[in-house]
Length: 198
Image 1 (tube, rainbow, N blue to C red):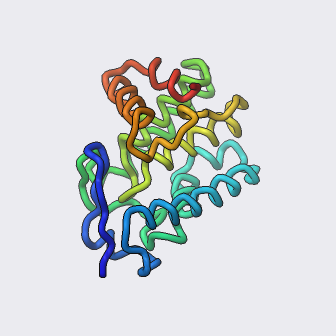
Image 2: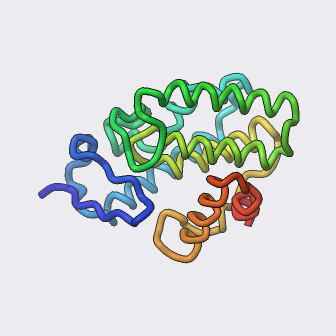
Image 3: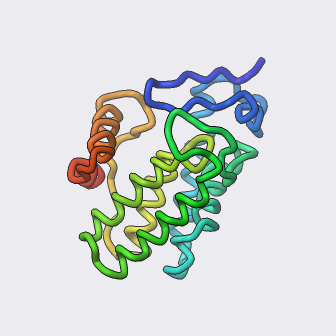
C-alpha cells in the first residue's frame, strides 16, 4: 500500500519519484505524514535555536540546504536537494541555484544598506524564497523558519508568530496567509508583514 496524498488547491503536488523518496515506508496517509514531518520540523527548530552561525554563513546556499535537511531529513531522501522538475510554482528547476544566489546577494545588500526596515527585508526574503521553490516540498515551512533565523540571528529582531496557528492545515488562518502572499506577489508586502507579526 503506497502513500496517498491529499493536496489543497494552493499546494505543490509531488511527482511519483519524489513520493518514492519517502524514507518511512510504513506511512500511508496524509495525517501520518503530517505528524512525522511536524516532529522532524520541531527538532529542526530546536537545532536552529541552538545554532550560533556567523552572519556570513546564513545567507548561503549551503545553509538553505542544511536547514531543509534538518526539517525533512528523517522523512524524505531528497531533503536538502534542489528539485529536478518544474512545479505549478517556482523558478524553472535548472535556474534554482542562480535565482537563489541572486536572492542571497540582494538580501545581503539590503541588510548592509538598510534598504528597508528589518521586517520588510526579512519578509521580502521569505516571499522570494518561497517563490523560487527550491525543494520538491516543504518550501513554505522552510521559508518561514529561514525568516525567523534571519530575523533573530542577523537582524536581531524578534521571530515571527505567523498568525499563531498551524498554517499548513486548511482553515481561515491558512486562507489569510495565502491571501497576503498573493498581495506580496503583486508588490504589496505590508499585509504579509502584518500577518507574520500577528
